[in-house]
Each structure stands twice: as structure tokens, then as C-alpha cells.
Image (tube, helix red, strand yellow):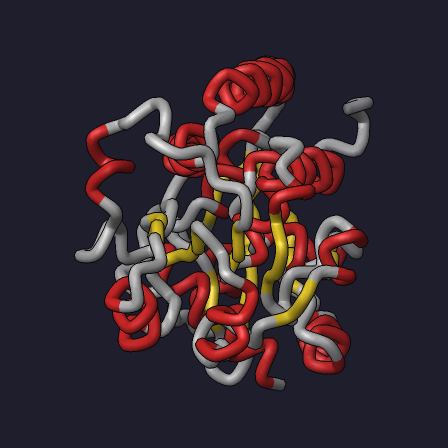
Length: 289
């Protein structure tokens, strides 16, 4: 249950844009750090995954209990989670760089800075472009700017192929559910909304004023596809609940899907592409992606 709450909080934060506390060096775009980091601790699953993508896993000495991708990340030393991490253990590990997002415990990251440890905080991305920007800044921070640029170029090229192919097909309406009781969805200020746009979909909640939604609006929107982000047992219950609304096109056509939250809600450049491929398959099964 705690994991569900964390997922919703994480996505709510992603919709807030940049906040105070972002490391100035990131905003100024410093390309090469004065000293190359050799002992990194990551406080966020997305950052951990992207460190592996950049080939920096050998200098990643610890991460959180929620860092599960790739499989090797599970084997790293665990320092707690982004809200409750062990400062004493971190000091024992002697990191020269800690990477985190704005969700990290501000009091504790401030304490780490006061103790002389460099902490770099990344703003929450609200779009694919901002995911790319964060990834590039991560590359700059650890001295792997060129590698980051190469990966971004490759992923953008693959995404453009999907966008060009889906642009020629009829659009389909989609409802994306990321929480239950209350019903929680994504609107235009979530990076997940870009999955929907790029796959040739129309987000029926795209113009909603809030991420909280109601089933009456879903009935009015009549989506062609319903996607439920995995919430454990609640996901199966939600799917069964939706199946009772037989006037919805997605229900009549059996186009209700449950997806992995570790993929769909993890704002990395690689999981973005992975999620986009999955969603495109739901909307346009005739395409071979």
C-alpha cells in the first residue's frame, strides 16, 4: 500500500514543475565537473536506472529500496528511501556525490550539504523534453555528456519513427488511471501525457483542472482504451469494476490493460520509449513497433 501512495505522490510532484533548490550548476549547464565523481549515491529509481544507462554503475555505491531497475541495482547497498534515508550510513560510505529529485527529504539533504557532501537535485520532468534535459544534465554532472547526447539522439530518432507512423492513423481516445479511491489520472502537465500524444492517442482527461477524476467523466469521454497503472490487488479490482460499464467502448472491445508502474511511472529516457511502444501496441495493434 505504501508503494501505491509513493507512486501517486511521485506523479503529483512531476506536475509541479521546477521548484527551489535545484543545483545552480545544472541550470547553468556546466559541461564538465571540476572533479570527476567516483562514489555516487542515488536517492531515486529513475536516476539509478539512468546511471546504468550511462555506464556509470561501477561508481554507484548505494541507492534506495525502490531502485529495482536494472536487476543489478537491487544488489547495491541500501540507504533507505528518498524520504527516510540513513545519514550515518551515508557518511560511512563516504560518497563524493549524492543525486536526488525534489522529493527527497529536504531537511536531510540540507544536513548532508552542511556536512560537506555535494548533493545535486533534479527538477521533476513534466514532458519528454524535460526528461531528456534532466538526462543530459545528469551526463554533464558525472562527466558523461557525450554519452548522454548519443543516447538522447538515438531515442529521439526511434520515437520520431513511432510518431510518424501513428500520425497517419485515426486517433483513439484513452483514459489513464494511476490511482483509485480517489480516482487519479494524468492531464497535460504529466510526462505520461506525452506517451498518449506520441502513440496517436487523445487523453480524455488532458484538459482536466485536476488529476482527480470521476467515473461519470470517463463515461462521458467514452475512451477506446483504458490503461491502469499497476497498484497490486487494487488494479485487478479496478479492472473488474470498469468491466461493469458496458457502454464504454474500451469495455465492449475488451481494451482494458494493466501496466507496470516501474516502467510507466519511472521518468527515464529508456522507460519512456519502452512505455511508448507498449501504449502504441494497445492503441494500434496492427503496427509492428
